[in-house]
Image (cartoon, rainbow, N blue to C red; front, side, top):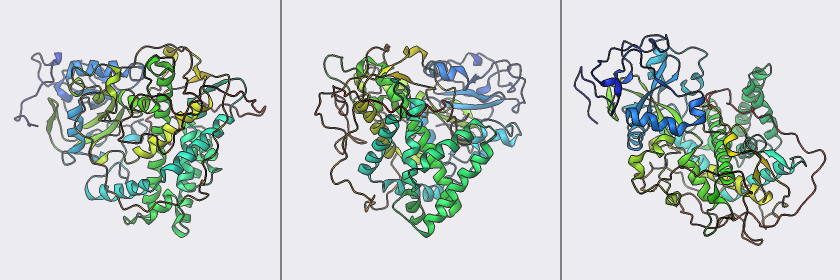
Length: 556
């Protein structure tokens, strides 16, 4: 990367704004009427050229088209607007995003370096505050302190018993499915994807099974910002503080106890902060990943059991979602520590750069000319859905187990599941950060009983003895076979499974790093057993219960 000589500008490829006009623009001029940005807009765009907003309908309706247009106009790094009067950069290029995440000295995670709030241009009630405000967590630190906190979280997550996690998730999924009404309809977002992760996380953290529904109610109040939101937030914080204090004196076999016992010696305050990070980040990610995978299975002909020839697996669907519609499509951010150049754009000290994870996955420079077919995805896990560099997500293995088990259990229990509306009527949340469905209505007419419990199931979760781990290494160089966009589909028949007697998913299911070849859904029998529903089945949850946890993850 070369820094230009003072007074020069490196124009973005094909940018029409650089046809001779100098960098004399003021941000928020004719386009928005906002405050000035030192007389220069990122990229040297002239007065009157509006920035592309990374919010609203464009992000929800057609993000892939939005990223393609930005790439065509500006190249791998594009100037954008996060909200009226607040500019940033969106990194669209695969190699540029790797450079951004691996160069901690030049691109910091410390948001206190951001020029916008320093210049008084970020409102106190800005919707960006929750996602960009600095907190003493591994998400906002660099260097040795980040490594200390990351090691504590990564080593704690590595102690999870994967078999027990799968069984816990399956039991929670069965309970949710059994609670649905007898009318044969459900919303897989509100009644399944949104509820399941938190039911699992409460047990992982050492809370009672009964605490899951209660936390769901508290977070519903927080997200609704209604009369109960303040009380609910206080109660939520009290629960976590009490949990930390309890596990400090009486440790158990749970994430909270392991986090407190780690050699990093976290304080109670640090422990509470990172429990919130694990709950919020893990919850939102698994919600979106589960919903997006179920949508793919229900709308894409390649995943139909009626498809002739080889069939794709749930693991294939999980991987394709991480390439095409990752749970986190964009993530803030990095802040430039000095003037520099990235992707042909001149970056100023204090500028914010947003990680365009979905856009980088679709970068033609990473895909190569021959990687246009759906079959090309194979076992390719060179996507950037988990980030890259020292801040790569440490929870990807547990998240994969939870989501894969959730999807396979649903397909096993509801083998004739089908979409209740045409695919084009499915709506997406207008979040610049998460790629999440508003709802996923389905129909079903029969269901199979839960699988019998595994023999010799331990009554107590005994943590395995594992050595302290080091943070996950950055992803390998871009693979040659990222996927192309999913094919058009119709609601049609539901996803079918394999003949009765197939081995259910378990310890033999392909795990992270294991390419999964063509094959049937390993968890879905071909014949269903009609079973009556109880008359007092639960009512569907409100669809808007999760837009954020105190607003600070989903950005709404």
